[in-house]
Length: 290
Image (cartoon, rainbow, N blue to C red; front, top):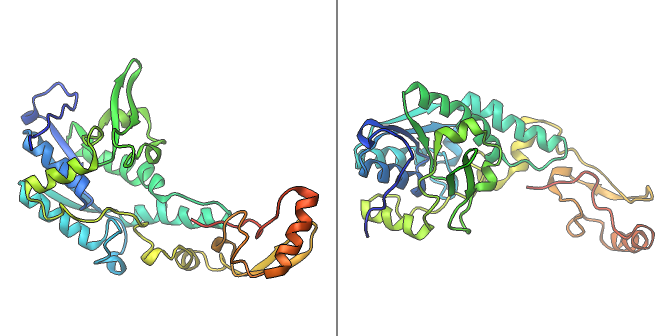
C-alpha cells in the first residue's frame, strides 16, 4: 500500500520540524510515529511509566504496562527514532488514581482515561514536549483536528467505530493548537495494514480495553485499597423507608439495578408497590458501577 501524505499544518519543512509522539506500545501510536518518521519529520518517541506495572505485565488488553513499554522501545528502534521513558507514577497516582477512588466514594462513575488526558498527557507530557523544543505533540487517538474560522477544532474521526472525540472533550484551545492526530482520517484496518507494511511487531497486537491500573477489571478492590471502607455494606431501602435487605458496598451496583442485589421476591413485591406509588422501583441507594 502507498504511504499517505500527512500534513501537520506547520510552516517548517518536515526535516526541520520536531514532533514528540506519545507511544503507548500499541499499534496506533506506533504507526503514528512510523508514518511521521517516514515522511521525514524529526520524531522523538516518549512513553510514560504511569504506575507499578508488575501486576499488569503480559496482560493483553491493558495499556501502559511493562510489556507495552518494551513494545514501544522495540518500535522506536525499528523505525530509527530516539525513545524516552518518563516516570510519571507519582503524578498519575495523584491526578488519576486518587481522583478515580474519590469519585466512587462520592457515588460517581469516573472515566479515568479522560482525567489522564486532562492532566498527565495533555498537561504534563505536553510541557515535556515543549521542553524538548518540539513543534507539536502527536498521539494515536482517532480524532480529527481541523482548522476552523476561530482556530483549530476537534471533530469526530472518519472511523466511527474508533472515534475517541468523547475522551478528549476537555482539551483546551491552547492544547489543541499544539496537538496533532495523524490517524483521524484513517480506518483502523488501514492503520494495521501500515503496521504490517513497516514490519512492526505490534501489527496484530490487541486493542487496549481495560483501565490500565485495574488488574483483571476488579476496580472495587482497587478502590478498597486506596480508600478503606469505601465498600462497607449498607441497607437497601425502599422509597417508603422500608429496609429490603443489605448490600456489600454501593460501588458494586448500578443505579436502577433490579437483579443480583439479593432481595429476591421481597424486592419484586415491594417493586410492584413502588410502581403504583411512584412509577419506578428504587435500587440500592447511591449505587454505581463502571
